[in-house]
Image 1 (tube, rainbow, N blue to C red):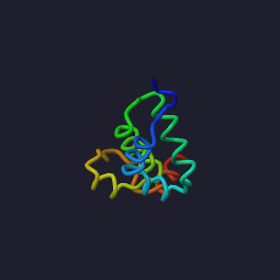
Image 2: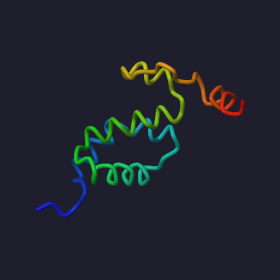
Image 3: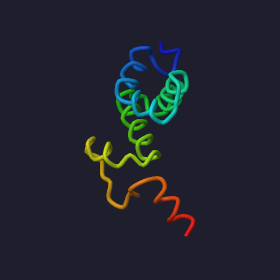
Length: 90
């Protein structure tokens, strides 16, 4: 019987996919594990959770180059956070 939302193996799998992007976004290891655990309680797939958190983190930071390198779609994405802010303020 499973008593927890995720196993230590699952946390490791998700961190392998997302740790550097989450760190660059300013998350601590504790915050990263909390995000992974919360998301996995719904999704029940650590690999997908890790990839999703990496993608979300990169999109929130406006990391267009890293998203392109990861094979993610960047059509319509702002080139930087400052350019997005300028558009929103206009």
